[in-house]
Length: 79
Image 1: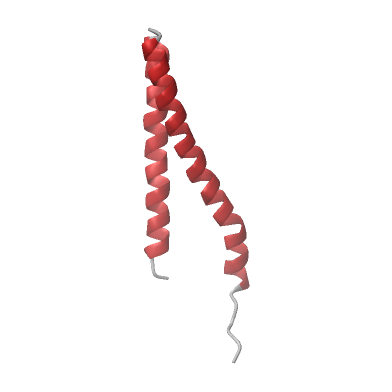
Image 2: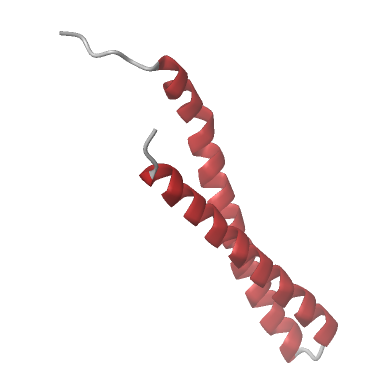
């Protein structure tokens, strides 16, 4: 007996999986970059730059958490 293959879902996976991986990697990289640069700027006495990089880190962390939560919801949803 042959199993039915959902070609549409398979093709969707081909572009969605790399996009999701890129999104998660990019947002987490921005968290690290913002936090590190914020710390460096704070030590150098550049408070405006430290604040801007801190805001970048916080926004990227929120985007990262949203991407992960969305992925978990997609995985656990039943169609």
